[in-house]
Image 1 (tube, helix red, strand yellow):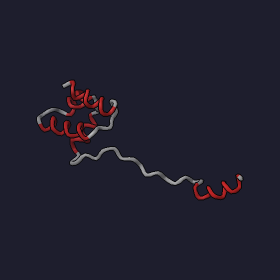
Image 2: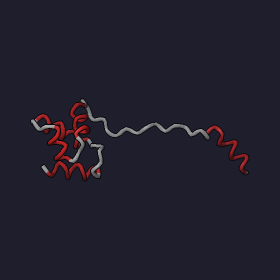
Image 3: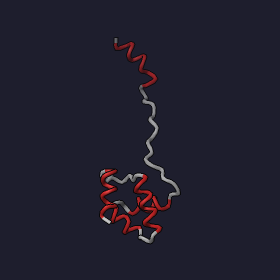
Image 4: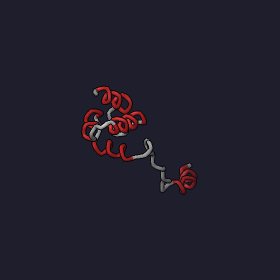
Length: 84
């Protein structure tokens, strides 16, 4: 099943974030009887990543954090006026 590892590396550069295709493939091979360790080994993933994909009911994707306002933002106009 070297093609599973190749698919993962092509789409994600070998990182830990899995795509929808990998998530679907993990669910499929687990349902067909593969063990978590074997899936992780064949796809080049951590076992915890595989376990999380198996336990999830739907693909969640990559989540970005909300950007916080900088401490200096409220003072921006004041600083710009003083700089001139």
